[in-house]
Length: 533
Image (cartoon, rainbow, N blue to C red; front, side, top):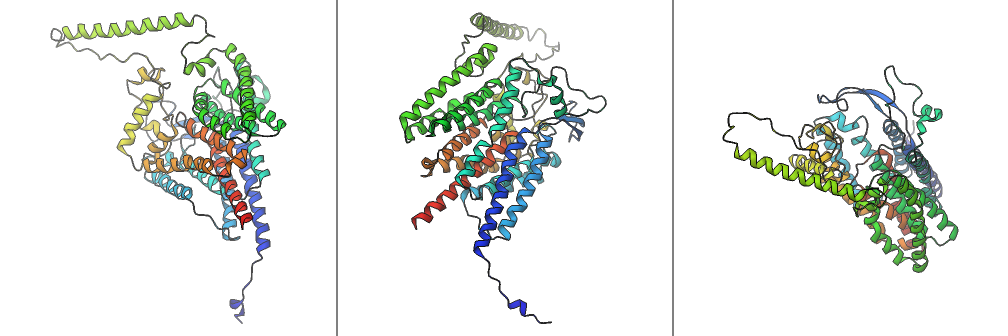
């Protein structure tokens, strides 16, 4: 048989390859849109077997049947979606010869991926480090999915229309969760609705039941996370409302920002409001750099008035809204009756405790020799709470653990099995008694250093902080308000990470959003270079 085909060369049709590339980019874009649209909204009861790596004598951490509502199905859909998009992206690279640009962020991304993989391989509890806890699923596989989604999103060609579409794909999450949070805040229990119960579970195993007093507040795990992600959305749509030129777009974005602000208030958690306060210099900077400063400043003032109008009915319904927002900086609460008297009573109690403690030390010291042979049980610390709702105490203990294994870490999402759950200081620092289980560090960055080491933390910071800074420093940010607004939202997420852990329901907004922003910036840069040739 002739082997003439060995010398045959087939020239590729560049135009056809470009058309195929656009079709593949469209598939990838809509896949990413599906992820940010659907995954954060998935809620469903899942009951499965959990094998604990150690015996802790606590129901939460020991082996047995465990129920989860917010993360299991999110995790499954995240894995499947990421696997599908990865295959499509490989086709783009291997078949269509897409050239991946070399950037510093991608190098940091690769370092982070290697560190995460090594931490899972070398972790004492490998299965747990790989998949995560039964009620979080924030293990190595989940983080690798985040990194892959970011990488794919940053290597897509975007049009202005698609970039804007991505922004507004985030609004269903805001609207649905604001409805849930507001209804619960004002006393309406949505679990009384049959269709809601059917949505959450069709049937429960024998012996299983929904705990009395349960409520459906949001589609993510806890009010702390709701507050943090609300800051992300408020920053995003606040900037759009301020910087947009068209009046109808200003009104639309202002309404969405107000709805997101209501979501923040309904969460009864302070970290989102604190994040926005810390973000205020960036907001001022964007107003100053706006093309029409006076219009931007006026728009921001009008939006602040709307925020106040939203704030008043919430704080009148529950005075804790003040405590978790303005009250974080100003102790006095004008919406709480007898607030001053309550403060004085607290102060007097603190003084009595201090005086009693000193007196006891003096008396016990003077009688030490008289009662030398008598054994006395040590007195346990009294109830109290450390700064940051106990976070300062948890961070201190977490840093002690990190110092023992600074380079490889213990494995992601294994924190509760290494934290000393029998520490007597828990009662005086966490305010919830000795029985409370500390299952996470309440800090995204400490969690990464604990799980995968300080090298992984450094790489994470380079990606999470370096990406938004790259967007801010770009000379083309001022030409597109959507990049500037999404950059502000990304910075808000980075800041709230100092008070919250990473969870699937909110992390996909950041990682996909960061990738889309960088991808759109690359597209813009190529277009400008092409015009200048």
